[in-house]
Structures are given as structure tokens and as C-alpha cells.
Image (cartoon, rainbow, N blue to C red; front, side, top):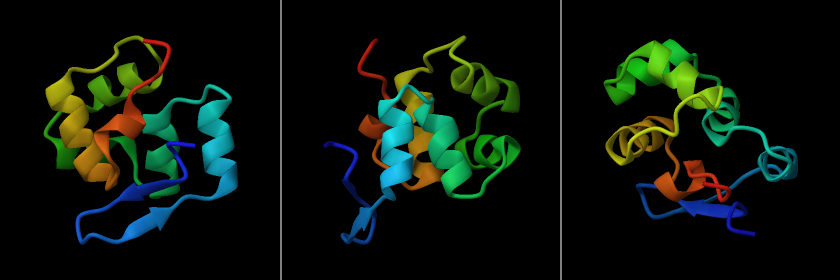
Length: 90
């Protein structure tokens, strides 16, 4: 339910496709899922977020949770709310 809409910078609501929401609910990594939805490469997101590409890979593969600071910048690069990138299972 929390993935049905997200406020974006200009104040509009953005609605995500049901398939994207279902993918994340089923356990897909939200950073990878939103990155692919935005048609960005890991290196593009890394550059925009000011982090190393390998760090993005570690987050997407579940090897690192990502710091709050990095997730905030990644969320900005992906144009989503940071909360949408944080897993409910810790």
C-alpha cells in the first residue's frame, strides 16, 4: 500500500505500475527495481548520488543495507522517497 504513490519534488503524486509494486512486495530489491524502472544504469545512479558503483551493487545484491546518507542521495537520483528504498525486513 505504501508503494502505490510517492510525492515527487514538484508536489505531484506519481503512481507506479502494479508490476513494479508487486515485484518489490515479492522481495525484489527496491533500489534495483526503481533504477530499472527509471531506465538508469548503476553507474548513472552512483554518479548522481555521489557513491561508488560497487556500493550500489552491494546494496542491490543485499550485501549492504546502505547508510541513511547514501540512501537519501540514491533516492534523490531515482526520484523516489527514501522510505521506498528501505526494506521492511531490516
